[in-house]
Length: 106
Image 1 (cartoon, helix red, strand yellow):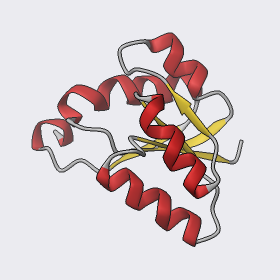
Image 2 (cartoon, rainbow, N blue to C red):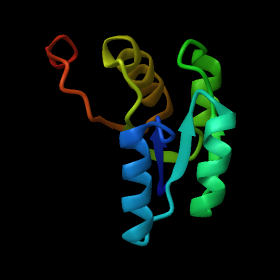
Image 3 (cartoon, helix red, strand yellow):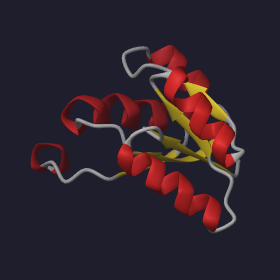
């Protein structure tokens, strides 16, 4: 497993992360909840994409198949961090997010 997935890629910060990754020669998989937002970004950057809602653990696990690490950029993290972290644990993928929300950090 060497794949990196950016979840929340179509948001402001997620797009910046994706663009920076490509500029560094990386080829992350873009992901999020809305395929209609992911599709044009992935086409512009020449990357693959996957969509899955955070309230569907089965689809999240499927989305994380073959993924080594997730960069989670979809807030609000008080609602999104736990389901993504649990899916990463189930898939054996590393997890990092960009939250600054104190309740999530605690």
